[in-house]
Length: 244
Image (cartoon, rainbow, N blue to C red):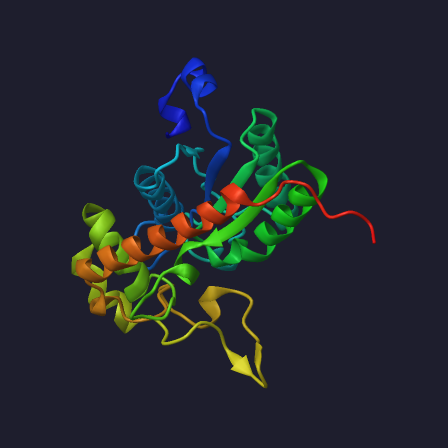
């Protein structure tokens, strides 16, 4: 059940302790993909999974702004500090736990959030009678393409799930002024802190290779993996091991 579509009394009647919290970002995705790509994808994977599994699962509203300062040179990109992000996600999860939804998966759609979500999940699982785990959909999904940014992987997902939001007449422009890989690497280290240091228009990867068929495969693969994770979360003990 999508929490924001229900009344509090309907939420109170929900017989489940499982919850999905979609988390993403609002940031540039080249000249062709919408800035809401990351949270839209996370929300879609969460909602689609909740509809396919046998047990009831609550889906919280998405967190639409994440750790995205690396896109600051591109108009419209929004970001918060890692400290603010960790606190915000943690407190949302704490409110879910307060209501009895104490088996939570943080469904993530933005690479910049990964480290912070891992910290939040560990802290909550240690401090509460709860299990909280992160899940980054594009790392879990089986794909023909590398992740990139606004490249063929994300664009394929959108062509399937949100085709009306992809500016298909700008895909070639996205590829022409984009980068082949993320970052500027020397001696195994990325010297570029901001995306604008290595891509002219924010794109990484060739979005002209994207297809709706690949997007459907990505969504199916991500929901299958998330369903597997939910099954494991559902049966895992909530208590921490005793001191040795």
